[in-house]
Length: 374
Image 1 (cartoon, rainbow, N blue to C red):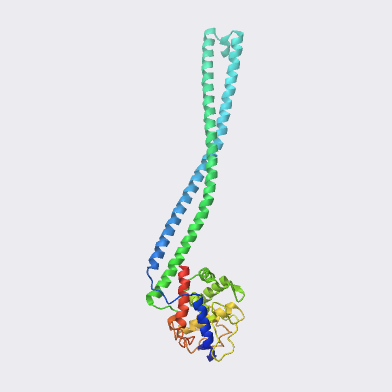
Image 2 (cartoon, rainbow, N blue to C red; image 1 turned 90 degrees about the horizontal axis):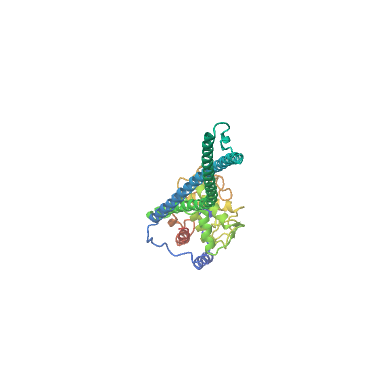
């Protein structure tokens, strides 16, 4: 058992330097009292986002239905117009044939021959009937032409409308994705508000639990402070993701562990070898524990936090085996300070660090992170 690593202190000069860095970075005073109900607000925002997303979905479905109807009408017109044109052409042929026959009969002076054989009176009557039928067919052909032209114009308009609907659907699809993203953001905000609200109701911040902030929230906050874009050779986004992932595996709030690292390293300006929590540092130590990768350093940190917070913590209950770079065989299960402090308010003054103001510093940073993520 490495007793010197379990409860460690820092030289006064280092602690003072880090305190100056934290104050200069304006990471925030003590926790402000809530002037509003963030859970109620988050629920209202979620309801609004869901309502807008539902309206967008309904508009999309309506547009799809209209496009389908337009396509069906276009298909029907595409089939009907050629038939009408063919019928018109047939009538034009019949009219032409009748006109030719009447002309021949009129030229020969034997009007009755229009019908072939028979007396002149019957022939004249048949000629009149032929002329009447011809007029009817001409009128019918004209109506067919007008109807065909109207349908052709309707087809042009419907094809134009379909083009509009196609473009509208593309826009609505983009809007739907945007509304879905807003719903997801609102759901995350509500979940975060409920997690934070539970902490506020208790008046304490438990070490164990789910991270209230997503990696992008953590990284976004840190970038907004003007902090480093890379830490230990990886981007701040990658490091934030590691904290949330490793925290979840160990059952520890990864976002608060990240806030702890801000205090421990002076906003990552004084980092040990992939060591973001001063593990192994003490008043009489010339060095601290080295970790081969950033993930190994974070894993050791959150697993050690789990041991401090959980009196029943066991290695087989972790998402990953205990860090071999921090714990020796069996050291995790036999850690002497197991369960000494379940909340961050209890950290410091001998638990993790000797500084009595250690916990307020960490929680002040965390409050800033929460404000940014709200």
